[in-house]
Length: 135
Image (cartoon, rainbow, N blue to C red; front, side):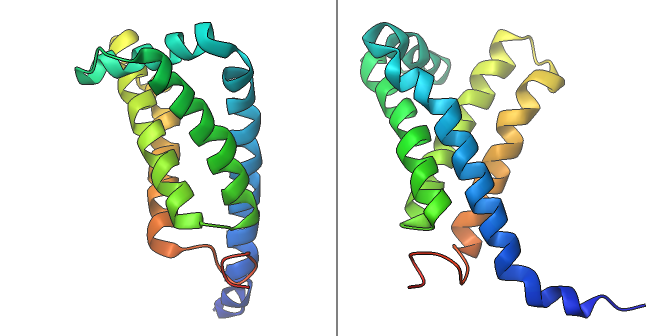
């Protein structure tokens, strides 16, 4: 049995993937962005796990903006590869931070790692036909 007809829905699948994850990232990042400098410092403290101990407020703000703006760009398919780069880096840092703070608990760190894999894949795949990038 062949399912080659499903190939016709590749771009619809990319649209669902991009829009769904993009909206989820906006919803995930908004509380961080709205939390102000205190929350940004807390989020930016994750960079210490990479040996970067300066400007935690800036790093936290950048992470929140990556999730909100990057998620919105991803959802509409505008500057998709750029947004996916920002989100990949943000999720790699999140995975490392969660890994180190939970003693390597796979259930905890696997979620941001999985998102990093998906966002990295979108860097390579692109936005698909149903996107502002393609228009």
